[in-house]
Image (cartoon, rainbow, N blue to C red; front, top):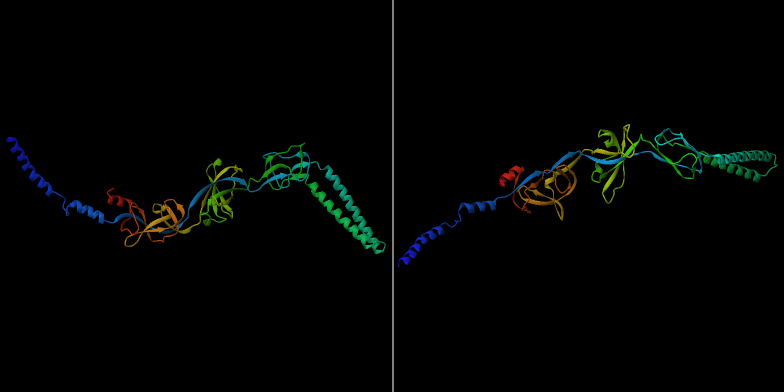
Length: 364
């Protein structure tokens, strides 16, 4: 009997406690629900930045290899035994200096024969002209003699040219870079005998993006540094912009001439070229504002409401922390640079101008 009473008493004690807990259920006007409602109704926080139009001038470095602007392969025009080779690698020569002498005795004899024939025909023409005045010769005989004389003159000139080829001279002032023949060799016709370079005229070819080419032109000044001689730069000039673009790399080619060639500079050395573009007006956005997906590049524009609008754009150059925009946005518009998570078209936003403010509002 005692146990039953105790059990009933315990049930009596729990009844008020259950009622109390039921009374503690969350009220619709409680602070927790009010906080959630405010958070749902609050605008999406985004960091924004203005689209700017500014004058740009940018510098970029490209590498290349020095080469001589003037370089020649000395080729034999006639065959013959090599009598003398008057230069070696590293020798400086002036224009017209003799480099190689070939045995010219056969051609000299043929030239002497041609000269004698030419003189004979000249004599025949003069004799027939005198006879014709006395009506002792026909016009046909005189015409034939003149024709023979013209042929003889042409043969003599041909042999003179071939004879001159037996003495090989420097076509311009420079340095012998390669020697491939020695005295006693027999040089066949069109044989490469030696190479000549003009180290006072060094150039290099550099490759640049097609996006950079519109800002460059022949005559623009550059700075060329040669690693082997230290990084001190030498003045140079863009001498030529090649007219074609590589369809695979979308890059063009420039020829740069060193205006002041360092004393120890040599063709084949590695060099670096620093090119500064001309100042141009461009529309830019922060790099952080640029988005990409399968449809291409785009940004989020914040209008005056302020609401979000997606805008497709076409970009140009990347300039450190900025991006050139070719089309799609206008100067003065605002773009989102942070706070992209959950952002959608037409969404109401609350713009802030710094990442610190955005983080503070988001609770870090």
